[in-house]
Image (cartoon, rainbow, N blue to C red; front, side, top):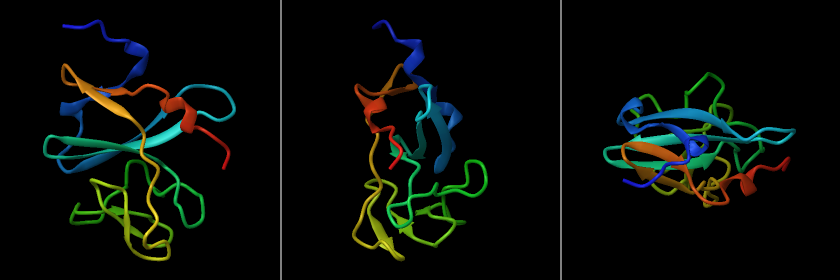
Length: 124
């Protein structure tokens, strides 16, 4: 087993429902990386929590990122719908745009922030 940098651990895979989602904040300072994880089966994706339409967070309630049937990611403010696997907007005001993916690694049952993921933290 490799040495795991515990500062990069976001959660255990088993702590994510399938399908399910949860928010995370990584880093410190004025612009920490604010993202969310979404799991379907064995696949885990991570995206910046930033609507491509208006630039605000997708969720209005904690960890509320999915449609009621848990088949798509939902922007709670505008109703935009995004594919879980790709982040591509398939309905709503930003069709054809995508959520910004955050690099992650799943190792030893843990979801880890990938290399240079913090570079995605920004005010825009």
